[in-house]
Image 1: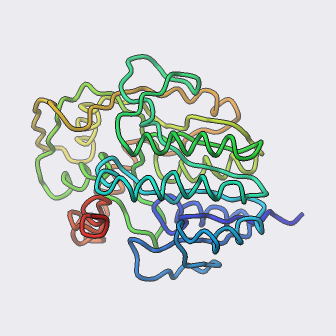
Image 2: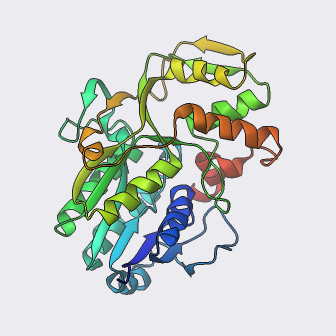
Length: 314
């Protein structure tokens, strides 16, 4: 039986790179649509279309041709979205509003658990959302557009991602686990602000697997997808499993990223999905890559969304 055709909008990125490889291994016909914001070339052996979300006519003609559209493209991260709010709204909300209706097949949209904001209890899909940042607000708005655009859309709220993705896409070192793992590998001191905040975490390959699983199982609706809920201070301590003499400094969190939430992924796990990578696994692979010199300078702007986009979005 012929596998469905899949268009991955934003498929050259951190999650998209892993997802592309995974779907190809499973026999899907994959096409990637991406504007290569963080790349100057695309070498993966897969059908590729260079394009921007704001090229409405171009993308609008493509969308009906695919059985499944996975929508990953967005301005990602609180700080990156705050650089140029008008641009963020255009990319994260206005483009989906104009284009989701052109999808005639199944739509898969990836959102974030950041929409929960600050809450003390374990949070399911029906829990109240309290987005604190423009990033979370725009992702929540696009969730609603996805679920309302066509009956049967699949929407994920992913935990904070970590780990190394595919061999082609750039790694990210603006993500908490990856940043601390890189600092630990270089003998730097990890600085923990606050520490009692809770977050949910998900390895990038488990995120890709979640999407592939949802496609293959023909799932519909809204699902939380996370691997572990951890306090921030416990994440730092876990780094010592790989770096025994790691130095950790603690400070007060007076402003900045105040999010604190624990995500319940029971609904998705009951469908048969489960993560395969622990937080410790992800930290260890990042530490190994940095120590081996596979990433020359993890602190370079290229590996941070906000640092790289500073001069491009203002």
